[in-house]
Length: 72
Image: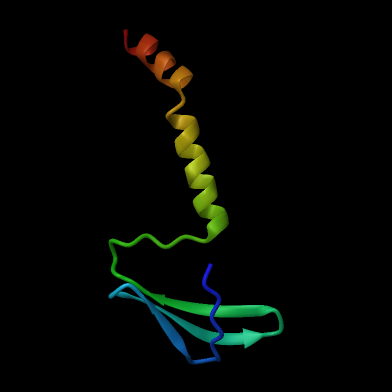
């Protein structure tokens, strides 16, 4: 993991087209602005993990077998 120090108003760039900017710092909270192309999905990590878990459950072999039985 790369750890960088940034002050309010400072930014960093990921690749050629994603920019993260520190918008505000209040106590232990940091507001971050993200500028990225529309085709790049941006999620909070807890939401991303929920999506991954849902996808894993949906692709479960038992679920596919049940769907095949339903469709005949």
